[in-house]
Length: 149
Image (spheres, rainbow, N blue to C red):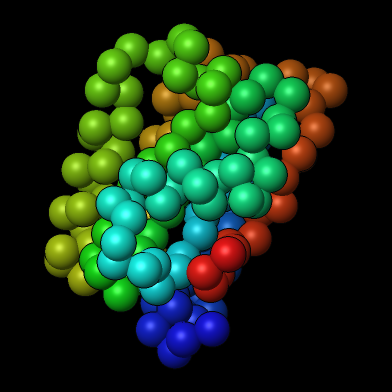
């Protein structure tokens, strides 16, 4: 794994992001993941995010309600990819506000803050369509995945 990928978040930043995922998932049955890689520069971030989503097995959630925040560090790319269950119920442009929030924070050098705020908002938005259930099971790891998969 390249240094640029490994060092993108400080250890404290990584803990903050993981804590934000765990907190957000207490409000929704949705599953949130963050993936950081160097990318290849050939695929647009959204296309690469869709592939990483599949590679990470995020399409196997029971309700199809996984959300991937994908970061291509080397090419300054970012994308949000939601599972089929989300796409079936949310309006077009559902992710636009979160994308802008992350983009603006990243441009200001506020990487951790941007991810934490985005994850919090994803949890809040998904709560309407996929509220937390008492029998909810954490179907995907909360840890950040890294490296080109």
